Length: 496
Image 1 (spheres, rainbow, N blue to C red):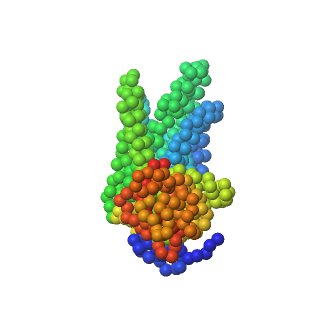
Image 2: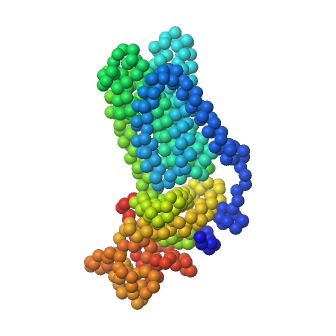
Image 3: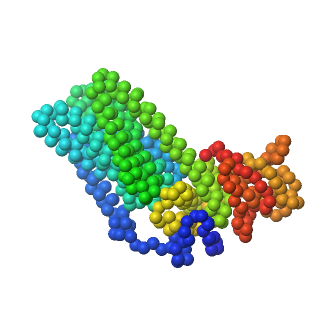
């Protein structure tokens, strides 16, 4: 493993690193609730107790046989929903403990709080109004949305408060945490509904497609498995936008999550009340509100995912120019196809260890791009310099694992560029590389004007997208693939 010292910080990348010899310096110990035993042990114990209590409550209401049937049916949509949310966060994946915590919080803690609070509120309304049917209606349309959405959103709040540095893209991370918390909640709730439906079918003797169990499964797991995640994702968007706001915008940071939470409660209340809107009320609400909003939110999060890739391609070249990253890496890290090829290459040539190091390198470099983007837009956190130093230190430590894989991926996926100048003594149109500058050409296509080829950093001047300033590679740190004098412009990648 190379032991060369890291390069200096980019001139515009923030303050100089604190004294101490390593980027980022040493952090002072935080308060007790931020120490590992409190951050992991406390939530784990709370979720374990909540899980045991909710398990006992659901089994008491459904019976053992109903519980097992409900469990078997309720688990079916879960893998699809989890995979969808994981895909959204592939650009800047958060650590798996955050995701497990969010799902477990929804399935255990949020479900327990909701069952207890909803039951207490419904009984209190029934006693106050002496009208049990009205109490059930008010409980479903007023109490349940408020209690359930607040309980599910608590998972997002806790992660962003205590593990914010572990998040990659803050907006999508908020969406994913909210979606997984709601998925866990819907999983537990489906066990209860499906188990009770099975018990009713046992009493009435119904079975098959005409049974209440089949109807409940179709409505909750086939038609609307995204209902609870969709409600809570609105809150997650609010939390994500709040986290992206500057620390000086305190009012905005409070109002955005509250606005998302109120929207989630309103949509949840409308959904619960749809059965009271007449024979076709449910289908009208489903077609007029749920499906269009689902499409809108899906478009928004996919657009945000593509925007994050553009941010990576736009922010990382300054670190490549300073020598922290290889010239090929900003493009490779800004393309999901290149990332997949890099992981495959690392796994094939270095096994699981290499693949794990490449994945960590990718996550840290992406977080670095997001951090710099926030700083450039005036929303830098107070610990910007410290956090930047920490990420640069992690990237530098893993560079020997990651660079060969990312350069291999960049060679395969790099877009076409136009050769506009050639160094003295090198024939135009020929390939270029270390040594004599007469390496085999890289797939150039003849045509009028300049010839075209593909590459991933060949050249002294480069620009990753139209409009970005060309930055020279620092003297004294030439990349092996560089041939000084070639000038070219990257085409806009289309494979991200």
